[in-house]
Each structure stands twice: as C-alpha cells, then as structure tokens.
Image (cartoon, rainbow, N blue to C red; front, side, top):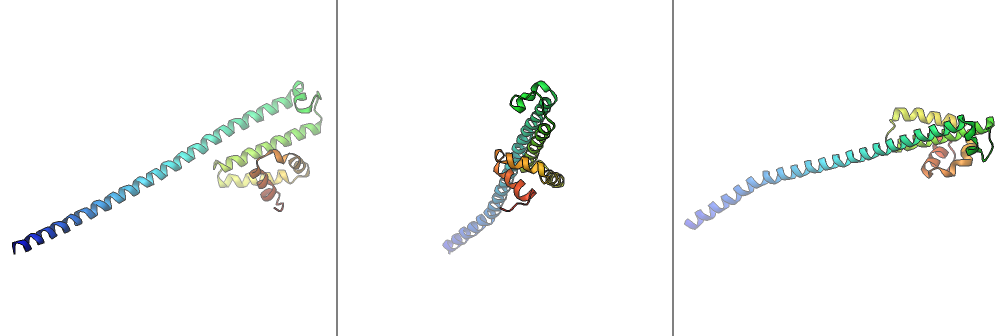
Length: 167
C-alpha cells in the first residue's frame, strides 16, 4: 500500500510538472514567434533603407547628368562634344539632345519606381507623361534609334506598356 501511495504521488508530480511545463513551452514558442516577427521587420527595414540609398544615389547622378548636359547646350564652345566637331548646334541637334535627356530622365523615373520611391498616384502621372512623349513620332524615332543602350526592363516597359507594341 505504501508503494501505491508512492506511485500515486509520483504520478501527481509528473502531471503537475507537465501542467507547469506546458505554459512555459507555449510562452517560449510565443517569444520565438515575436522574435521571428522582429527579425522579419528588421529585414524589411534594411531593404527599405537600401532602396532609399540607391534612390538617393540615382537622384544625385540624374541631377548631375542633367546639369552637365544643359551646360553643354548653353555653351557654344562645348558643342563639339555633342556634335563630333561641329562648333554650333542646329535647331534639330538641340531637339535631339533634349529628346535624349528626356529619355534618360524617364529611365531614371522608371528606376526610382522599381526602387519603390514613386507612389502609385505620382506614377500614373509619369506614365501619362511618358505616353505623351514616346508616342510623338520624332520622340519615338529617337527612342527606336537609342533604346538598345537602356536596360532591358526599361525597354520592355516602354515598348509594351507605353507604346503598346506586341511582344
């Protein structure tokens, strides 16, 4: 009988241990889940920061490029840089240079969008501007002559989403 009492006491102790251990295990799992969520959030924040840094660098490059090109257009002594030796730009050369600058600008806008730096509301306005620009015959001709120097994703975007050309 004493053995039966001892067996019952051991059983009660085992049940009590399990009853106490289950909440501890559940608490541990909840803490692991919280930690995993925090790690995911930290990773998302790191990705956002990396995209913002890339966008910032693109913005600096874009601004410097635009400023440099305008300075070349404004200074006749620099025109031979754009024209293979011709000292003055014709009106058509100036238009072609501005078309090239606008294509570059829209390329930067596209890259900013890919980095999630342009909200949907602004993106629709940019797409509308791009459609107006690229569908004009002289601008489309400039695009057709230069598009292979642009990233393939931007080429596909202009060709299929802006110009609605078949794949």
